[in-house]
Image 1 (cartoon, rainbow, N blue to C red):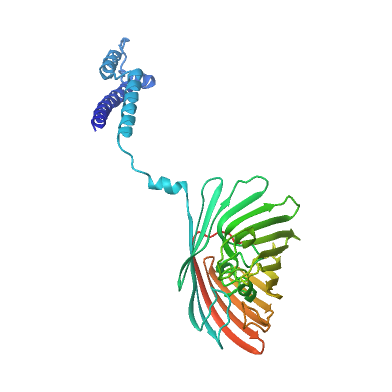
Image 2 (image 1 turned 135 degrees about the horizontal axis):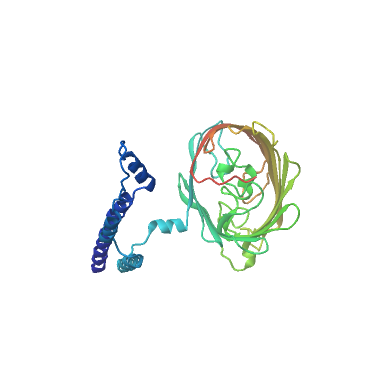
Length: 447
């Protein structure tokens, strides 16, 4: 405090000196007449009558100016520099002596968070008992809170990024995803670790706000679970130097979880006694630029791991996906037509037998313009007798759905959907209306 008081005193002295300088120097400028003006004034004041030339003596103002200058003369430049240096030193000393509170703004700026809230709600009517397989599907006649998703992400530094997805549902809160991704590995490599959706196929890695229908395909729920394939683990991906986009992905995760690993350990948790007790996923993602208006995505995926029937029995899931998109670059309406097909085959060892079933879907989406979209989807899943996981799913099942979507803006949508679901000879009809709103940061959608 004493240092601060001393600095204020010195500052007042400097201000007083500067004020004297300001008073003195303008006076000098006003007392300096223009030579042409003096000559003109002398000519005007000359007498009109003829008289002997009189020598006009110049007014002796110069000595007065010198006197004024001497009286108003302030400190020299060296003295001013010395004063400024002294004030700066005192100010720095005061700042260093005062305790500094942590800067909240600085802490936030060092790690800017991308935060978004996405709310999905739906109203539905079913003509019979609903047989949905997804945890976020409208699953009853009436209203359903599909989810309130809080997405938080940020670059930690030049080397790592963190992403989390917290889901608030009617029956609780869960960490859907929480993982760290590397940003600077050499050789076109990238890794991530934590809890994440595996990159099996096209539909599995996506969240409900990226779906083209209000419910997920039947095959996803039957093979993986209501939350799709996900779990704690690690993943490595490599972008090849091929002339087209080709990415190889390999990951390993925990093999338990009724929500997301039902073809493997599912609800059982025997623990990990060796590498064979983990779930492994491999995938190849490719993109082909066919034309300025056409693009093709083609992927191959496989998943291997132990199942819950004991005796070191294992399960395998193989899949392929294809997405063909037509988007004319010269379209005034910015329309697009997208065909997406995904098929899967599952093999499971059980005591004294091997079970095999398959399923898939095909959907066609027409984006009429940025505000309107419509589409249709066909699904098929085979049934099995004596299936320990789905003992009641012994009939083949198929479902046809259509949807009409309106986007008031980029941050909201209304979707009307109708469906016909048939299992054996039993049929169920459904009508759904969904609303989605988004607030906060919104990343770009994948192709």
